[in-house]
Image (cartoon, rainbow, N blue to C red; front, side, top):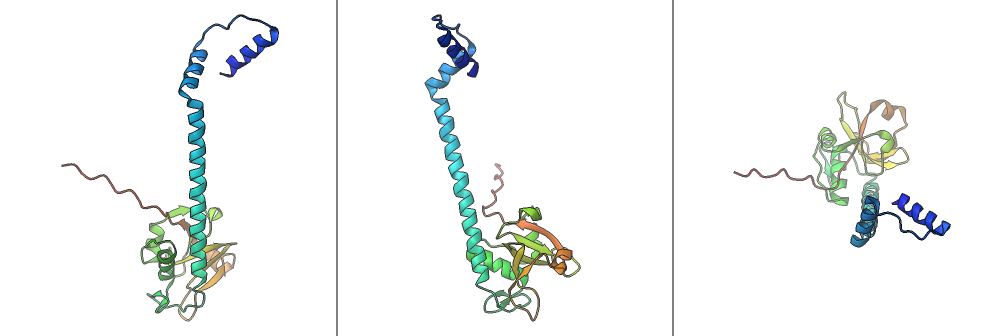
Length: 196
């Protein structure tokens, strides 16, 4: 296409009046023009770009709602097995309640199950609303919190404590960091039904 355009410009500039010989490029160019393929490709690119932007905006909004909701529970006491403001929260009960209230997703109950049900991400890719896991009981994924940004997370830490914000850079949390996970907000596709 570019070669064809260059040839046409060269012929026009030199004053030549002979038509260039027909080629496969000419045929493809005519076909694309007749079918408006270039216009349609541009429309698809624009539409997909808009959808990606809208999707990213929606994810940011939901993460923001999640973090704001979680911050509203600062000071609620820890309670082993607790999963509500009335009973208090343990770490996984807090995460589960925040996702259910703010996003409408029901996560598994235990921290290790939450880790298994979410997508692994690198620490450098953490975004507000992602989950951070720690080994606080000599077993992997024994503690969970919600990343809120700026290397901080909110969680329900232990008996006698309350929901609070912590800095992941503190040596206690750095040594025990087990990984980061992202909660996928779309439902997984159901497997195809067997046709019998």
